[in-house]
Length: 210
Image (cartoon, rainbow, N blue to C red):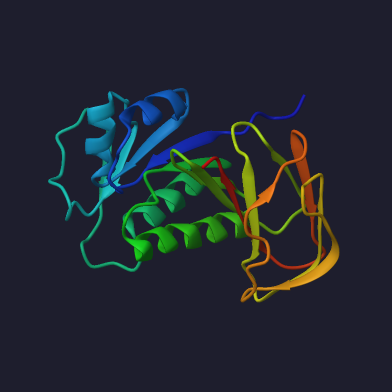
């Protein structure tokens, strides 16, 4: 038997539209870290928090019965990135990130960049919201359909060589893809799984249900 991955959940600071989604999808058995105002989200959703990390510029420093790491307001890393680094430091090898895709596109992209940091650290990390799941990979991967109908594959590195997609409506074989191309948008599952392989580079993947 293999060693079970140590899972961490990070709740970031993007506005929440559906608290029931969080209640039903956050793994309460995981180690839960709130990024700054993410603590308010967790409190409102009735989700227990193990650790709070933030500079508390978007919400007051909470009086909570858990560990708190206060960061300086002027710093290089975002609160979410600081949470990710702390999770990796503590030995977690799976990180689910909620409330990380909001109305601020710069914040959303910053959080996507964090996924590349996780990929480079050999950590299974992904961003989840009501309609989407996003992750970055430099390895062959099998996508599970689950509740998703569509998936999109983009070159995150400048160039991805030998990209092959099997089990999808639109299949490709040993294709070279560049970061400025968008041909990988809105592919569809034929069955329950899609297999994606690549010889070199890094891909950004999205699963979508709307």
